[in-house]
Image (tube, rainbow over all chains, first blue to last red; front, side, top):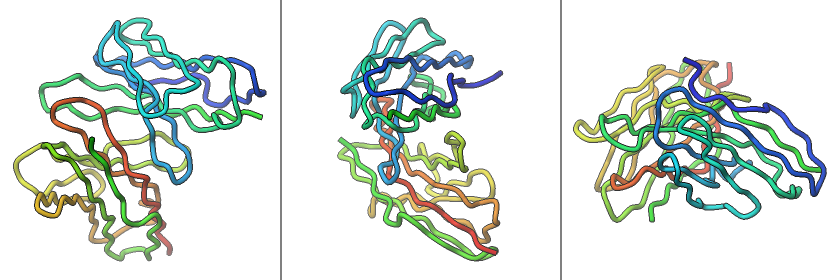
Length: 115
Length: 113
């Protein structure tokens, strides 16, 4: 049981390049999330997917797109990277509701630098 | 919408001293409350959660938190810290009617020998 996995762990991009961050979970969770973490800002929600087949914008969606490929996988795409997107990106997953299992489980993060 | 305020961005303490990390939230509806810990260069790990019932919640690594509805607070405490507790701690709130978490900006706990 690997939990939430993310690839890659590190990435350096030039301004204008594109890339996709991959996330997978093996806990049979319904919901998946993408956050970015910046110093002094805490974690801010970029996009989330309440269940397979649905995605919605979070607090800071500009410059990003997502795909919920299946129940296990949720990818985040930067179409044209900008230096303001330099950050640490975390994927998380959770059950939608029920059973008291309301917490989100986090992956190890991807450190992205855009030059 | 809900919000979370962590009142201290940094808390330095000496080993074996007690510590309290403060968290206040605002919400017009009932919420669930969480504390997460992030060790250097790692993801977030759940320390404890308040869903309902007893207002004193015990978590992993000797941490506990008390939910105070009248003061809308959920402060985290540990009676005696270790060097290994050095990490960033995040308070988070989730409305009972949906599944999105709102995080505070974090408190960096540094335990010195």
